[in-house]
Amino acid sequence: MTIINWRCVPRLTGTRFVQKIGDQALIGVIDRGSVVWRGSAGLLCRNRSMGILMQIAKNTVVTLTFELLDAQGNMIEKAESPIAYIHGGFHGIFPLVEKALNGKQAGDSCQVRLAPNDAFGEYDAKLVQVETRDKFPPDVTVGMQFEGRGEQSGHAVVYTVTDVAEDKVVVDGNHPLAGQTLNFSCTVTEVRVATGEEMEHGHVHGAHGHHH
Ligand SMILES: [Zn+2]
Image 1: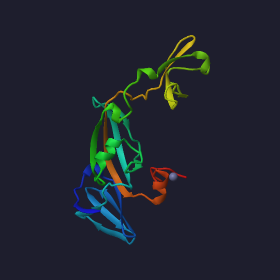
Image 2: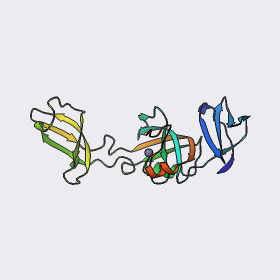
Image 3: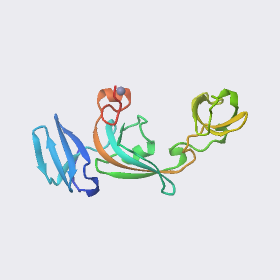
Image 4: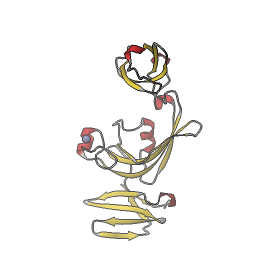
């Protein structure tokens, strides 16, 4: 945990931070260019220039908003709501993004360029296969996806139908974004310590995580 000089970022209005200090949970919300901090005893202060923010480290739960862009800067995916992952090798996010986020805190942003091998892999022409049509439902159309087992790898692979002919169907087992260089852009909205149960399960519980 570190104490920093808090720089207000107006475009983050509404961003919510949660910071645990001892038993007390402090909630900070950016409002009209200042941070309003509330604790269990009620309103703590407003316009506070010093914020106490937890840094991203192993076994912290990181909540962030993100955008995924292609190499030309075209939007591929924009997160509708924040996502959360456990930091420190739980495979919740691209490893290079984890590396870039290490030590950052709520309010920080980062941009990471992901080569195909750092994202969804190189395009593998061997994963394109021509199958007989009788293996598929009668209404098979381009774009449908099926789970299959790779003949060489033996792993379950999701295949996308790319062409349908009279008696043949072409399927592609590459991820739709395979072979692409991507730009991952994100803003951290919350950092907290992961619970023991979350670390055991390897995923985040509660808001933006699993509910079970
Ligand atoms: Zn769980």
